[in-house]
Length: 327
Image: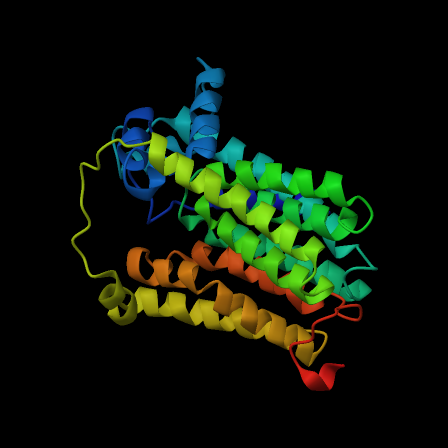
């Protein structure tokens, strides 16, 4: 059911509606113009996959489902390139739905009731696709890698420490090549490792290796990719986010879904974990406020996913408690 919902909702988003936000990146030429500068140029994995997929489609001529409405916005639009977005993101959406199903069915690590499992599956899949009015190549894949890392960590870390840590670090490298929001996965793992194991050698070593995997990839991308930025942002993003009506709705979206995760939390300890997770993720939040557009609701999704599983994680065996009365 999760796979079917992922497929149906993805198809609905890409062909039932016309994006009013992303309007000039649906051809190889305009895509290169959009993603070859600023922070976009470091998100190389998904861009490579999209371009290769478009090339693999060759002379394929998809049915005229998107061309007319997209041509109104940009006469350079390539329907085949738009289909490449759809194929790539739907593929990762299906993979995401599979990993999400495996996660919510982890009865030992996560305390989720039978009805909550169904609710969360439907909610997460529909919510992610709802935020895809900002059509881009890297969001869905970044959520997939985030959930895959969480799955490997929760499922195998205790039993197969060395192997699972190696896999997590490799996935962290791949995830960072895709999008720098993988830093939020580092925040999640760091918080859970410290609370679960305390300040012992195992936790410190694991955190150091995971953080190093992220930082080395992040810095390497910025060292080797030095193409000049032809365009400069001239707007004050803080003022734009705080006073533009649509962006204030974006802030409201963040607050609503933060409230949701707090409401469904198993205990006050889980709520405290969510609070600390947001605190240690302040660099990401600050970047969104000062260099992003909060109307792009997708920006909160990685924080929401981390908070969702912190709300349901079993804290019974944690060595460090954030709240004294939770002992």
